[in-house]
Image 1 (cartoon, one colour):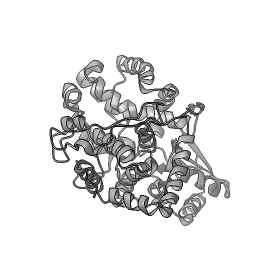
Image 2: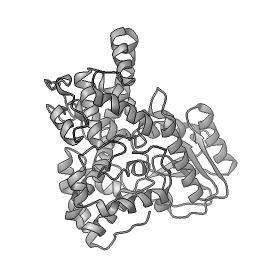
Image 3: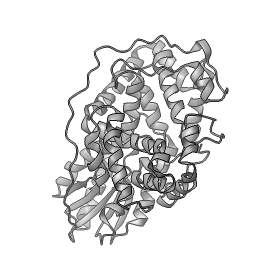
Image 4: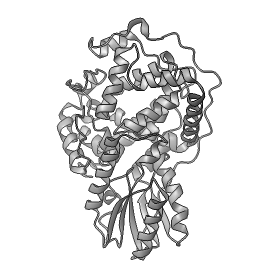
Length: 414
């Protein structure tokens, strides 16, 4: 899908949206499940790298689809965009799943270090050297492009867990390190769903007939895929926690702007402020204890630079990499030098960037600097419905989207 790293900018996201919108109705509904390969004429939007970093807002994509096709005509596409909102809200209300995933990664790495056979099986999978040609192709496609069709991601994860019998968390980690749209909520919870940990008793089982049909005969793994799967036992949902509330904020002459790679359109939230300091921070390496793909780091870095250029201030600094203590200290020193005692930032949901912010906050506080996170109205409105399955979420979201469309608030802007 992406032979080269796509342009990580707001205009590039709008341009891809504009090119896709004519196909967001019947074309998308009819062809979205077909994976015709990275060079094929796939029906998907490929907007996910921009949506993941909020170089393009969910409501911008949805508004454009409704304007072109109506809510009914574009419902399948709109639902796919809303899956992202649902996953984010679900993880935000159950952050234990993120922390359990990170612990599962550590545990799995420990197992690999002690078990030579497991280590060899893991290397065979990561090298794309199994006896399943479809899986091998997807390994290389992911490494080379930073992207996989959604259906291929499901097949890949199912084969990883149930045929290759590898720890699910290491598969999720592989995706998060290589996907341009690697999202901690969508990725972690989707892998849990495939493994049967999200919806008790309902793992996702890849089948050769399904792969053959939706790749139009490109692959047919046959008997090599294990379909005799037993659902995990004792899976429980943790209690649902609170959802972020709207925050009243006001910029003062000593309020700066902090931009993270999780939300690269701060001007659509805060307006074009007269900032004494605008600082961009990169947290890509917080995704994993392993190496993050260069194209993933490059996309995030370019997106931060684009956001920095769109949000001028008396001082503009960054992107500063938070991978080390030096980066954390550099943020504090920049804020102190600019006379800033508060940094406004769009709310950072549960995941690696939130982990980086948790490390940054006490460093800032040592110089009396506060970081204030402001949730977006879209999240405040929709995340409270992320309590159970997606279709219960959609039952609550659809009327709100209809009301939004009927109110005349449709906008193609940022």
